[in-house]
Length: 80
Image (cartoon, rainbow, N blue to C red; front, side, top):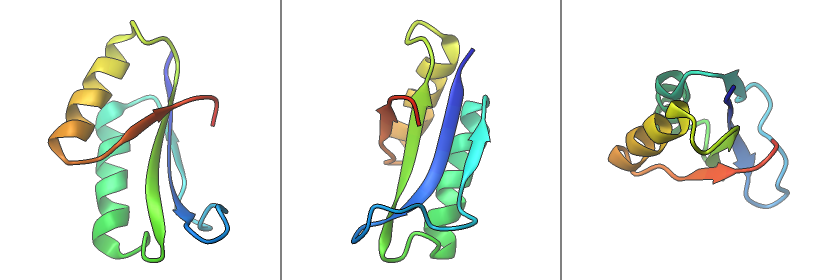
């Protein structure tokens, strides 16, 4: 099962911007949240990160990668 984390991270400190995080299994929700962070300015002074944790043969990874690429977002892999 895939777990996707989306958050804004302060560029200077690397700390998560409070209130910016989302944990979901839905690629669409993850991309929508990342776009909302970028549009609302929540990522000002920071970067929006999408972190995928799960199997790379999972359909969720393929969908997330395609959606993120279509919107110019980057997906990282790891454990959050």
